[in-house]
Image (cartoon, rainbow, N blue to C red; front, side):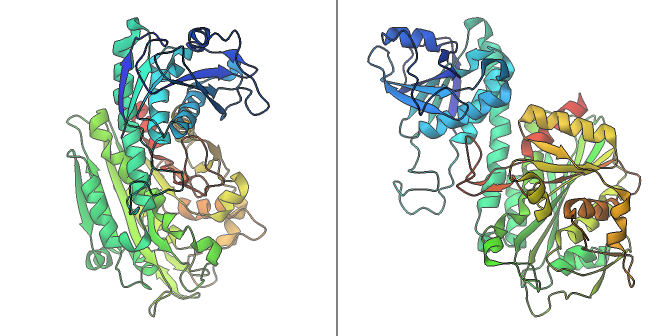
Length: 496
């Protein structure tokens, strides 16, 4: 993690290896850029065919007129469209561009000179600087994001009158970024290092002191009726786990349950996935990682809600005892499910978790899962699909996602599509989307297990894990930690 501080230094005199300044589209300099460019004897910004100040662009210049030896121009796009998320993304771009230096100063937050602006910049830098080098054998070995980063320190320049506010914003950004990076670390682990038992241990290690952890093994799961979770894991020699995280502040203002799908490797079972799909099958536990990481930050943020995290961990392999198409599984609560596709195991796990979670009588129930390829088809890798049975809950999650800078899109739960879940031999099938709409049909399947509890479902299959060609600014490549910051923003605002 970067060491981040706030300072009121003059941009021309701040001591750093690099000064990152904002530039608006068309070459109009942002706050802090003008002084820096004047010191270089430039009366206007250098605009080239490759750099016009668009969001995501950057340009590195020598800076002999500054205390910093180099100047990094970072595009912010149109001035009238600059918001916290644009600052976060620009900061991520700057962090990736500054990996060869140790200490960076930036005037990006002076675009708005507010706490939220400082928070966005600090968060963006922290997330953009992230690299997973646990399995690199040498300090200089290249990574998917390029060479090993030398970036260690960031100075966020702010007006002296706002330094205390800036320092508080940085502390908050560090909590959010640390949790997001923790989720990335879990998802980026190779499959052999995070089989259900090992992942349960890693989640227990991640938990904050204020969060109680209980891990349930296969015998307990069988006794308690978690048939969906056990069915998904039948083909693996590593038995499933249910991890319960319980956070309870001194005077809770309500109770919410968060459920996370944790298929540690999804080969599809007997309905074997293609080699292309299997390349990123280790990311199918990103929902569980998001919930675990969010719970790890609750104490640091002082969230005044009771939060229960339910994480269903299983490995979906085509072993000798794997479930078969045509099998009937009894999930938690007694409902029977006809298995049409063993690759659609995540919804079986969530059926268990949601039924169990609803029986805890929470005020709200939210699940997070890399559930369907249909969500990727609909929204690409740019947004999560949001569904649920309570408009107020969905609205509050949309607002929280906007604050966090994570894009979500509301999909309807059309009752007419329920017919695709009809089974002649069981209460419901685990797959079947007829003419399409697989993400919606999966949402309708989950809805059956929440009763009257206000419930929302986040299908994060698209943005949870990004290939190198899609990754940008502070997101990816690899695991993004999507959902962590939305959950934290939602929990904080719900408590307030």
